[in-house]
Every structure is written in C-alpha cells, then in structure tokens.
View 1: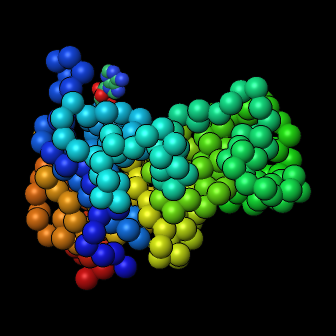
View 2: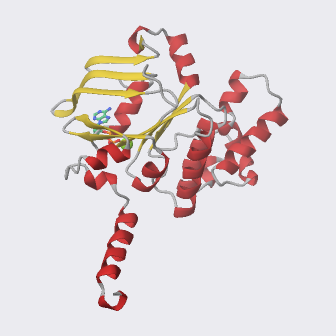
View 3: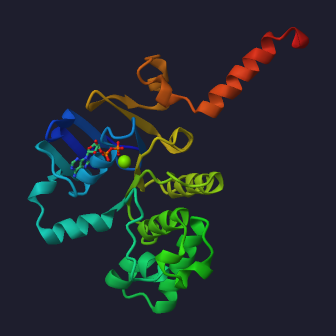
Length: 266
Ligand SMILES: Nc1ncnc2c1ncn2[C@@H]1O[C@H](COP(=O)(O)OP(=O)(O)O)[C@@H](O)[C@H]1O
Ligand SMILES: [Mg+2]
C-alpha cells in the first residue's frame, strides 16, 4: 500500500515563536497511500506541522519536501497547484461568510473546472451528504449554520474535488458523536482508493485508531514515536501509551477483566 518514497517530508525542522520553542530537529515523512495520524497534546504543534506541509508556515530551519521538491523553491503558481493536490482542511471552518454554502463548497469547482452549474450543485450535494448535511443547506449563508455544521461545510469544501492528499486538522473537534462516526466513515471510504493519502492532526483517539495505518506521536518537540499501532503498543512506553488506547476500549477491557475475576462468573 505504501512505497518508500515520501510524498511529503519534513526534515530537521526547527521552529520557535520567541521563547516558545515548538520543534527542534523534527523529522516526519508522509508516504503515498497511507492515512497517518499525528497525535499529541494540544498546543504542541500538530496544526503547525500540517501548515508547513502546504507552505502556510515556514520553518526557522530545516526543509519541507513535497514529491522531493523543496517547498521554498516553488513559485506562487506552483504553490497554488500544490494546494490543488494537497488540500488543507482548517481546524476552524474558515468559510467565506459572504458566500452561500453552495458557493463555499463549490469554490474550487467554480474557479478551476468547466463543470455546469447543475453538475457543481450535484457534486456539492453529494459532498454535503457525506458529512451528514442535507442539500437544503446549500442555499443558506454560513451565518445561519451552527458551529458543527460550519465545520462540516469546511470539510465538504475540501473533499468535493477529491484531492489526492488531504491534511485534516482536527476534523472531529466540536462535533457530536453521530457526526464523528460519519467523518470516520468518510475517511474509511476515502482510503478504499489506495492512491489517496490523508494526514490527520487530532486528539480524537477513537477516529485516529480506527482509520490510520500509521501514527506519529509528538513528544519533546519532535516525533520520536512513528509506526503502526501494533508496533507502538509493543514499546509499552508510558509516555505514549495514553495516546494508543481508546479510553472506551480500555474501559470495556477493564470491565471484562473485572467480570472474569468476579466469583459470580467462576
Ligand atoms: N503564528 C503564530 N504565532 C505565535 N505562536 C503561534 C503561532 N501559531 C502557533 N503558535 C503557537 O504554537 C503552538 C502550537 O500550535 P498548534 O500547532 O496550533 O498546536 P496543536 O495543533 O498541536 O494544538 C501553540 O503554543 C501556539 O500558540
Ligand atoms: Mg491544532
């Protein structure tokens, strides 16, 4: 499913804002066809990682390579082109407030394709439904939507043109449990196509553990732990164990063990 040439590589990155040192000598690879989750406490730099991958944040030192090319060597046209292949889904919804939901979701299709209005509306309807929103929302303004709906419209906008690579920044944050499950399904469906690549920055362990082939845990300003869930659990490292077990799953295991110990079940 994956080959050994990274699609995106962050190499020896240093980044600080004044005294706030975020990364020191941090390296991370994203391989084609994988779903990689970046885990770590809030405020440690997961969003910044994704932003560096699309040139929205420059590192102080180190290199960002996309398909082997240094992102700082790209001219503005090439950067625009890069963002058509690698879509970054903002943590906040970042919708255009003066445009309807249809215009927001269909933005890329309207600007960059020759699809008819009907085709664009149909593709936007399908994208909205994949995040659990009804087509009747297409003609509403973002101001008339709830926070969770806005977030899902932002997601629909980023997947409607089916980019090869999507960087999802905390895609389930603030969503209700049904919507969270739906986003999980959307990610699973996306990866039925083995050529699609996703990176998830999240602290939603349930979704991360169920959809990712690989995890990278941010610790001490770098990603010292990168690998499959099985390989990382094998380390039995108390520093990262809290990121590797879904709390619900752990609770159920504990209940099962408690029941097995109970004399009533002997
Ligand atoms: N443009 C910026 N200027 C100053 N500090 C920033 C900027 N962007 C992010 N930070 C800081 O960098 C740290 C990591 O941010 P972020 O990547 O958003 O964390 P995470 O996504 O893991 O919660 C935070 O302490 C944040 O305040
Ligand atoms: Mg973040």
